[in-house]
Image 1 (cartoon, rainbow, N blue to C red):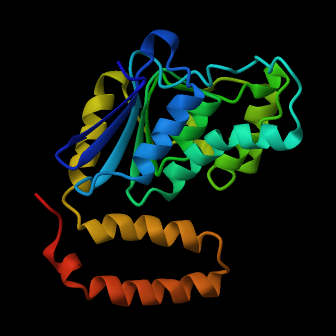
Image 2: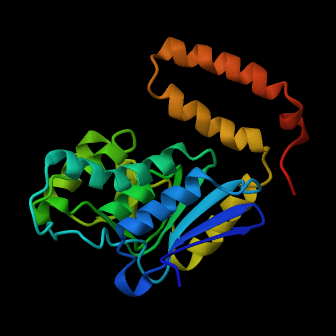
Length: 245
């Protein structure tokens, strides 16, 4: 069975890390497959739900802590790392909203793909960790994914301490949107997905499109962009028709 499962379910593209017996430790092939799926979602997909099989969301990369047998040139190392950077970008720039459902541990790569998602709903017992420094790895890949998500204070603490941060504190750091009791996590996420599916497609995509651009603008430019976006989108027939049912 594939290590990444992707299926379309009534408008929801469900993407599941499927190595539950190994904590969903992600291989480069898994990262590449996530990138492929999110860069080319089915035409009928309206949102993405990212989750992990088993008790943990993702305990990091399968190769973490293991160095190549030979010392590569810097350019080779950069090219090898692109599979991870590309995966983060596929979530950040996917045309659809991406919701991450997190239970158990989200470590390193797992912490990144959960937090870079547009909405992250975590179980009360979930734990988030950036532990690359414990493996003598400078965690710039993880940092790049969280640079516009986490507070500097929280991010530096997680990197330097390598501490496991509970979900409630992860909200304060900017990594999580909402926390649900463990037994209610699935229902909370499905309710949210159902709510989003009542909204017009261009609204779902427009909110993401606006925020991914406006956050790097100066304030007057972001306001002008909002004026134009508001006039064009809200006067469209697509917006007036509402969501698909």
